[in-house]
Image (cartoon, rainbow, N blue to C red; front, side):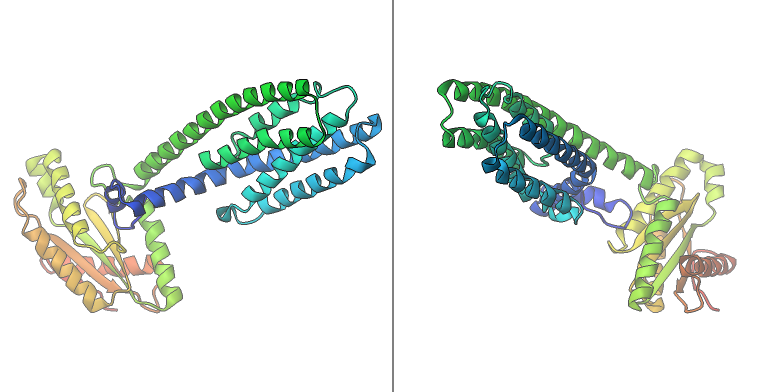
Length: 369
């Protein structure tokens, strides 16, 4: 989903089918999957490490694992340790995936080696070929990775069995287990992937509803303050100018009293849409409540903010509305050194707005300290 800070304009943009929007949505879903699957992957890896150590100890005690095969255990454990280390790193780089493939191959080969070395045959080891791919099927974040993991799961044991000259019956039993495991793991992976995608879309919709005003479609007060504060902090960090507009619809209470609340709501929507269409994508625009709106203009000097405010005022004054002529009053200010961040910036703009309304409304006034 593409993201802009100017109202929910990004929602309309994200509905397009451009390659950029599709790639952005894919990256966003990948990040979502990684964030939610990381605890699962860590849990499986740590549980696998303990189970693997227990299996090695039992195999050594039972005489199944010979010293000649012990180096394979060391390699597999080293790879598993690398997987666990990689999981602690930056998730966005997905560095654990190649380690995961290497571990999966070593683990499957080791199972095959242990099974073939066992004089009792491979029957008691074959369930491991089902448990591992089924248990790991939700972990692979993409269908491509799952297909690669399934291929490793199927081919690695055959490689071990062929190197150790396993009997034809053993290979047939292995094939049966691998087919069952592949089908089961594919069903689990597809179901889990669809479930994750459905949750991703639902969370996006809920986040969109929580962040936008259900009447005007622009940011609600809380979300506006979050993004506006971020814009102000960024401007201060970069020593860039930042300005703010405080906007109020003139005599809005009279519109509600004379024409009814439905006409008043329609007037608010019309004003909000008109303002939003004339702002930049980087501008932070929100409804503070009732008929009050605010805009934070990053990288914008006071004189430019005055020009923007005058254009907005003129655009609203030219609207055709069932409520008659609509006008707005606008207070303008630029961040001062003495301002207390976003709070101080909006307070200055509010003072300028009060001056505009006191001077007769349908005006733009600059804050003067």
